[in-house]
Amino acid sequence: MCFINLFQCKSFLQFYRSAKTVHSIHSPYVYQLLMHTLEDQRQYYSLADLDFIRSQLVSNDSIVEVEDHGAGSKMAKTSQRKISEIASSAVSNTEKASFLFRLVNHLKPQHILELGSSLGLSSLYMHYARRQAKIQTIEGSQSLGNIAKNIHRQVGADISVYIGTFRRILPEILTANEEIDLVYVDGHHTYEATLWHHEILVRYLSNSAVLVYDDIYWSEGMQRAWQQISKDPTFSICLDLFHMGILIKNKDQKERLSEKIIKKKWKPYSLGFFG
Image 1 (cartoon, rainbow, N blue to C red):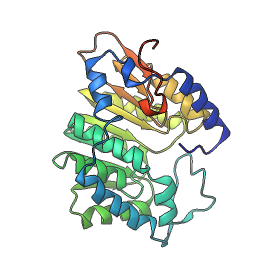
Image 2: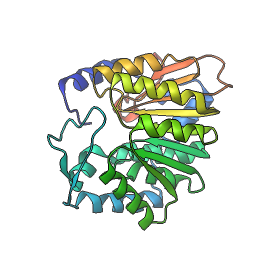
Image 3: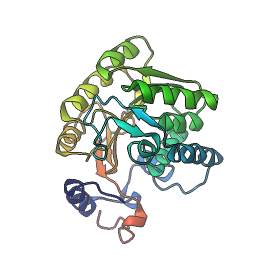
Image 4: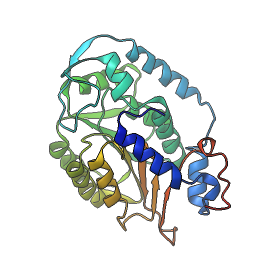
């Protein structure tokens, strides 16, 4: 695991001490979810194709002008950036993207919404996991949005990319569509923006919807936002995976479940006997 700053390093040490593995989960629904996503080691053919697309982006040194409407990048110091740098640092890494693929493959949502398209890879991973799903994604940067559109077009992926700020585009999408089954939030990593996203999104979710928040330990502000929205009673299941947070609406979950979860390979001595 790679840490960018001291805050994230300290946060992970605190997270690690209290995190449980799948062995400690007693909910059948959550246990199956984790086994088919976090702990799934199967190599899908689609993942190899997606890795090839990623490798092409990582080797592309073309320079683009990036408009940033959110918290910005911890790595970039200028708005002019190489596509290779964006693919290496700003785009969801292989582990995150593969998790999204497995999550969509397991849950089989009909309608997916993404906030923060970047180069279009994350939405492509979700598309490959469920090609019949309706996928909409919003990107604030014109140049990145255009790249995402081109990549999707080249592989024949039917994904709708909207270019503009979340505050302008999100209400338009939500009020013009049916309920959403899965939302992946990967943009505007600030306390205020995250709370705003959450407040508006919960009004348009299906009865079994899943909200996925990326980089919940990005900063102190993001951590505070996650701590606040993770208590939302709308969701009966809350999973803190450190690199992302997951909120799930599940009417069959009688008692609310909120856990910090880590891969069992990172905590092999935790077998569920003591939590």
